[in-house]
Amino acid sequence: MSFDSNIPPGPLSEKWTRYRGTMNLVAPNNKRRIEIIVVGTGLAGASAAATLGELGYNVKCFTFHDSPRRAHSIAAQGGINAAKNYANDGDSVYRLFYDTIKGGDYRSREGNVHRLAEVSRNIIDQAVAQGVPFARDYGGLLDNRSFGGVQVSRTFYARGQTGQQLLLGAYQALSRQIAQGSVEMYNRHEMLDLVLVGGKAAASSSATC
Ligand SMILES: Cc1cc2nc3c(=O)[nH]c(=O)nc-3n(C[C@H](O)[C@H](O)[C@H](O)COP(=O)(O)OP(=O)(O)OC[C@H]3O[C@@H](n4cnc5c(N)ncnc54)[C@H](O)[C@@H]3O)c2cc1C
Image 1 (cartoon, rainbow, N blue to C red):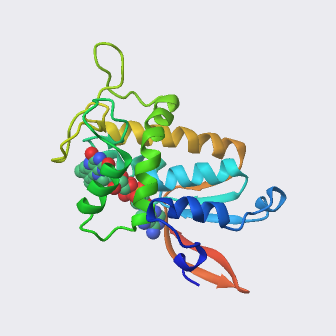
Image 2 (tube, rainbow, N blue to C red):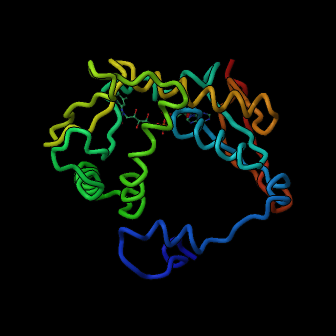
């Protein structure tokens, strides 16, 4: 059954919300019985592992590098887009959605991109709360700039180190879950294949160093 066939029909802008409202939930007591493998600890993997650990799942997290902080996400310099409309220049969730679909050569999943545009406004505040030092204007408010050829100022940045600072934030959240025992970290491990044993997934890996 495909992802789409699980979602009741309706407007694209509400697709993700409809999915979340109708998907099957895992009972809190059952979460500890489920093991989840996360491959990679860039901004995507580190955030996913930390979030799933916080939700109560047992997470095994693999990274090729000696530390989760070494992912390619560290190279992102320009900033992160959020439709906060702080510059009052006409930005909106729809405009960020549209620009992102266009920037992705119309190949992205529209429902997911709309969700990204919706949560973009909260992500900045969440990252600030985690300690990410976003640039501020002289009045102390979060600064932003126009980036990537768009007509509005919606890119929040931390000098030329946005990816590095965000990754440190994600790493802290991940470290907390590692310390609590909900995430088991496998540094210097390359995930090679997924092996099924008795119908269940088992991880196959080789140490790289
Ligand atoms: C130079 C540069 C500048 C950028 N600037 C911006 C910007 O300004 N704004 C913006 O929004 N985006 C920017 N991007 C894009 C953004 O950085 C990436 O889209 C994003 O960081 C990808 O995150 P990720 O977690 O998916 O992947 P990654 O950060 O690449 O993390 C993937 C991790 O998985 C590991 N891995 C992969 N396969 C395996 C395996 N089999 N076993 C174990 N580990 C594995 C890798 O080693 C890596 O650590 C930029 C990208 C680059 C390269």
